[in-house]
Every structure is written in C-alpha cells, then in structure tokens.
Length: 592
Figure 1 (cartoon, rainbow, N blue to C red):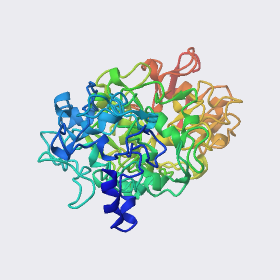
Figure 2: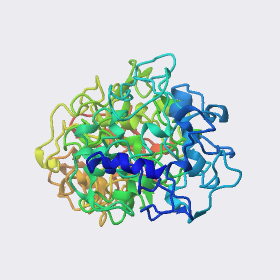
Figure 3: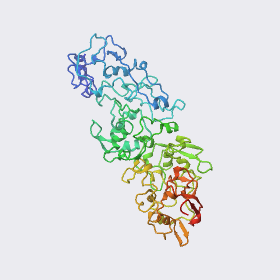
Figure 4: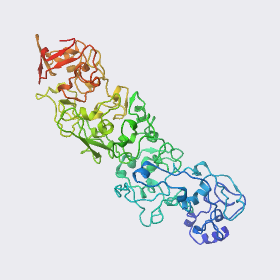
C-alpha cells in the first residue's frame, strides 16, 4: 500500500508530507524514518491500523484487534457529583474511537496485532513509557464524557460558562448528538506537525482553551507572566506560553488527586512556588514549613472541586489547601493595602461569606451570604477567613483550640479590632488618642484585614497567613510576657501600638495612652502597669478579636480561651471610663 501512497503524495507540495503519517511514530513499517518501534520486514504503513478487506470495524476500515483489557476511567467530584454525569463504563468504551487508540497505547496489546492475520506482525522495539496510556485512565484527560455547554448541576444547567463546544470548523472535535469527547478530539493520528499528534498547536494553551474558557484567565498572573520557565523534560519557555500545562498534565497526571494535576495538591503549586521558587515567584513552601501554618501539607485528598458551600468545610473534613484561598485561574499579583480590609488581587476568583447579625452582642450570625470575589473593591478579606473560621463551617462547635471569629467580630460587641464588618461602627474612644500612640500608618479608626496580624514572622516572606514561627500564624509574638520589661521588640501589639507609649519603659508622664489618676497625679495607665511587669494579656483578651466588654478587657471569669495572663493575676471587675481611670475602677485578686 505504501507504494500506492507515495506516488499520490508526490503530486502534492512538500507541506502535504508534514501532515502525513509517513515516517511519523505511527508509521510502524520496516523502512519508516521513525526512531520508535517498527516492523521487522512489513513495509506497508497502513496495515497496522487499517484493512481494506475484512476490517474489524467498517468505520475507518479499522483493522486492529481491540484491546481485551479492562480499563479504569476518570472520575471527579466536579464531573460525577456536581454535574451529575455518570462515569464511563466498558460498554461506553466498546465501539468508541478511544478504544481504537488504546489497542496500541494500552501498553499490553501487541503493536503488530492485526485483526485479519492469525499471527501478529513481527515488530522490533516497544513504546516509550510516555507513550503508554495504560489501562488506568483515571489520571488522563477524561474521555467518553459529553460536553455540556455552560455545564452546571442537573438542577441548574447552564450556570458554568467556563465549558464550551469547539467553534464550527475548529480542528478540535466532539462526536455525536451528545458531543462526546474522544482521544481524537485532541489528537489526529495521521498528522504530527503540531507534535504529539495534536490537532492544533497548544502554544499559549490554544488547544485547552478551545473548550475550557476559565473566567478571568486571560488577565490572570499565570496567563500573562513572562517569567522564564523550563518544564521537567521540556524546552525553555515562559509561564504564559506553557500556560495550562504548567499545572495540568493531559496524560499520566498525579494519581493522588483528580483534575489531572502535575503533582499531588500543593506539590503542583510548589513547581513554581517551592523552595527554591521559580525566579521571580514567591517561595510559599518555606512559609508552609514553619512551626505554625495552615494544614496545607498535613491534609491530603479532602478538598473537593467545587466547594460552593459549607458541606465540606466542617470539623470532620477541615482542611486548608492552596486553592481554598487562591484561585489559580484568576489570581493576580498584589496583596491588600494597609489600612484597608478589601481583598488583594491574589484572592480574585475565590469566595467567602458575609455574616448577618441580629442585635445581640457576642452571638453567632443569623445567616451567611456567599460572596464570589470578582473585584478588589466590593469584597473583604474577613469574608474569606469566615468561610472556615466561623459557625458557617463548623456550626456550634469550634475545632479544639479555636474560637468562633464571627462571634468575636459581631458588630454589636462592645469592642473589637476593626475588620470593617458590614454595619459595624468603630468602637474607638470618643476623644481620640494622640497620633503618637500608633505606629504609622495606623490610627484609632483604621480598618484592618486579618492578614495584618496573621502572617509570617518575617516581613521578607510572602504576605498572607501561610506560616509563622509564632503560634496562631501571627506576625509578632503574643504571649503572657507581651508588654513586660524586655519583651517589647517583635511583639504583635507593637506592630500597631507604639511601644514607647504602651510598653515597658514608656514614660509614666506620657498620657497619650489611657490616663490613670492616682495619689501622685495623672499618669500613663499602661506605663504604670508595665513597670510592675504586667503584660497586655493580664488585662486584655488572649484572643483579641472582640469581646462584649470595652477595650477588650478580660475577666478571670471569662472562658479560658480569652484568659492568657498569669494565673494569680487578672481583673475581677472593671468600670468603663472614656479617658481617665482610678484604682477604684478596677478590682483584682492580687493587685488592688
């Protein structure tokens, strides 16, 4: 047959040869120019797949013996649970185009196994490991599923515009009335001009984007980055050009996680954000290797796609993967600005919840509203954190050692650090303190974000609550020693509150902080206590998010989660005063 094909090919320009199976890896004839396996003596190129007479299938004049192997198919929470699609079966595979490809690429069926010959054609050499798909298709791009434009769950069809059909005339094909995906949707076995027998070039993810049009992708950091990148075993390129392939692998992906990722969960992100990171990228792995961090590396296989509600966020399935906070298809460079609670661009495409409160302080919200982060002005960082650190996720019982942050930031509480929760009023004093009480740019009416306190102990690390050497992923130390003599530098309170006003060594005559009227005249209340080796936590809540008591003042009778000072010290009662206090305003067990 080859002697018949060659004269015909000579009638066409040289470009026709580039689109020919001749001398490609699919040319198994004895005189093929391929470096791969080939026949010992058979010189016919087409006979390895086709038969003019007695084909095994009339369609395509298919002449190979089908693979007799049992196959495992791709499945995921997204396809099978969220979209409600049934996983493929062996019955779906029979008669499919994909079954034809697997009659070689299963790695089991002999390359020379032809339907109408009693004995296989003798072939020397074998497929490379990269060419063997195997019988486990669970780590390969899904086939035998139908493309549903717009997708969405069965009760809400068309709610996911990220999935589309190939445009009319596109070289990417889907088949039948159901628009089924087959191996030949992306591969043309007769044409290797694009490499790997792809139907068209995948530069800049052009092939992937034919069907997958992720919201916000074209402007995202991963789609626009010109940073140099050399994939394992590949040629030098850029992050933007390699695009989807930087994280996903169409064949032979990690078997530890669905979604055809290069590595298991965070290991995929570490491909660029590991230690050392890709040049110019953030080293997140080092932060997540610190003593206190989100359980990104500790939990495996818990996260699902999508997690559109709290059903997978409770105590039994509590987790914190990279994509619980970041959407890799939409994230851009840029964290929140100091003095603002608005999300930074690194959180675009994620989601959180906005609480709704009644009028009772220090109680759980009555409801939560889901918020999808589509811009950096309308959405707040605390909404992301509340998704996991509130009753939205765990109901009435917080995880061991944690508290309900939505209760602590209840807008009706007497005091709280100001995250700017909707409807909340600043609980700052009516007579504002002097500006020297705060570290610039902070002031008494500043709005904060969670990451202003919860972040790495080193400001040189990437911003965000990845990991820290300090408990609770805090930027500074927050212990029962905070504020005492010798315990000022590096402590959390003094990231915003001036140590020379509130800490040990502060001048008692400096009444920029709350004043104390004693027998010897007006003094700095905090300096008086610090000079006697009292710490911030002796009077203020150990979890200083918010309390139903002014100034975050904590009593010895409060829950243990909020008491952090020396056991023999602590306030029994305290009378609020806007500005000036006397000893009679405070009763304790061992001081007054």
